[in-house]
Length: 173
Image (cartoon, rainbow, N blue to C red; front, side):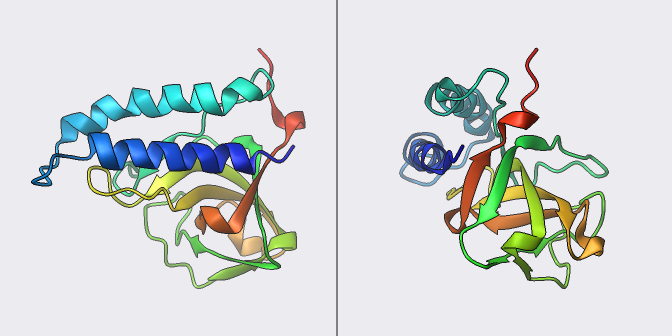
């Protein structure tokens, strides 16, 4: 099931809310407390606008910024969300190491869309308290023709992808 429109509408809404209402005041005073208050707003909005229309057991795609990665921490792969490039090739920023340590400088800069299986980890932005665009999906490379890419995390532009709900991967509790 293609849920790209749901995700992109959510992305536009949450981006507007953060930038216009949570980011800071007119003097651009940035406040970490605003970030903490925003997390449950993001979660509730995702539940109300995306999960509401999806099968039971579908999970929230969390928001993450560049500083949220803890050393050695592997994020939960949301296997039910397959991220697919809209063109034959997809520009990527791939993690140098497994587990990802936040270095997105693997030499592979493009992958053939048909040769990789990408699964969602998060909506990603570089900045936690400044202007946000949620420009990227953070994904895990589950399978790839280039075997050295399997298990690596990558960033792909949200506007260059479709989000496919793989209902066979939903765990009903």
